[in-house]
Length: 244
Image (cartoon, rainbow, N blue to C red):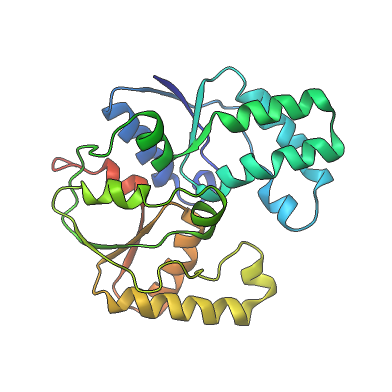
């Protein structure tokens, strides 16, 4: 299968390992992955902070750039949620019927990584090996907006060598929420403290998730407290093998 990678802003600028691991994993499974160089931001940060009209050029660009591809994957439940739920809203409000149709068509072909693997490629055992104690944080947008359910956990359970431990109060938000962490710093920090307490209680070496943004927030807190717990994107775990 020929799959287009939507890398996301955060992967492009701060956490390229998540995007690289996505490519490595899908190519190992026998698929061709292409990177459309014209891609930019999905516009989520604009919409979330009230700049809906300013997001219109980004919404148009995504639909145009991704038009040639049957399947698009992004290592981010948050960005996929924006593409599926915000793009049509922006197109309906500031665009026209033709744009709405193009936007909805692109959104229907866009998948978060665990969705692509299980729902489209029909694979749960990706041949990964990761000999570490790991706990999984289900990010808010993946859990509540695009509803990936237990798909990431189903993939992790098939990883050889892994010691997968349940995270207490897993469904509680980590407190990031994009600009929420800036505008409501005290509340965000309190939420992060709760999340870190639960992570540390598992005895895990690694906390994983499907969104680099939440892992950035959690990882920063864990590092400042010198807990020794690392944050690793789900794609990086799934891409790991005995020889890597």
